[in-house]
Image (cartoon, rainbow, N blue to C red; front, side):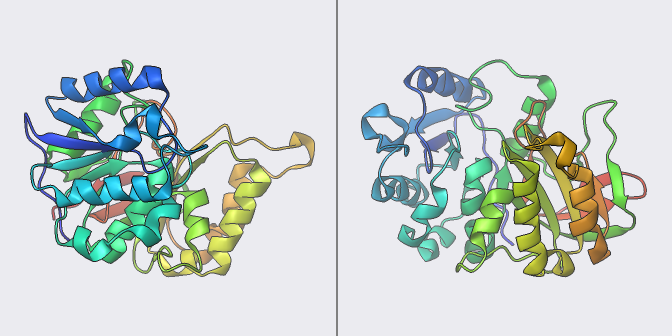
Length: 307
């Protein structure tokens, strides 16, 4: 697995929108936030309201074209997704992944961007970063832990412990330790990948899962899809992140999220850690997807290993 070169002060970074549009009043603050990191932002057409196509930042061809062009431009050192939303999986058939594989670059985002992470990790063979996005998160002041973790992914070094905010220890739902490449991201996108050429491959890997705004029964359904597809059987371990605004439809007649996890994930007999502060939350950690990592459910430890 290739680890793209880290960014550096003054590096030109492409800003793209593979999914939903950015509100017009957020683009300026997002550009300023990228500049505050010491980088030179280069917004592509999908960033502007004039490109909007219904609920997408632009039509499929434009969104795919922006991603493709960002990787093809040798003056661009990295590619940052402005936001998530919906639509990244629609552009996968339009991307020339062989061409992208020949020019691996630092690529960061999360949520709907999970579709691109999976393709770039599995088809293109390079590490990508599940990290906060300028128009969703740090267009406004956020906590130092979030920003320090983001800078760690952008500028390095990657190796070292992934530590939750103080006072929020990880919880073991199933004990044991495991080592493998990190994979995963947003549960909705991973479930949608099943049966496609970009289906999530969990064999021997540490599978990270998170989601936002889903009812418990829908999370149950998506985890059941992964379970029935053998994804928990195949993986080395599971790391559960934040489940923001994921409430039961009828609290008096619903399983809890923990009950769902214990019934669908734990029986695979793999170590399971719950409560990682990563996903649609602040503070949020950043994860290098595709990098080697080690987890120990007994001690609540997660660590990115040297490449």
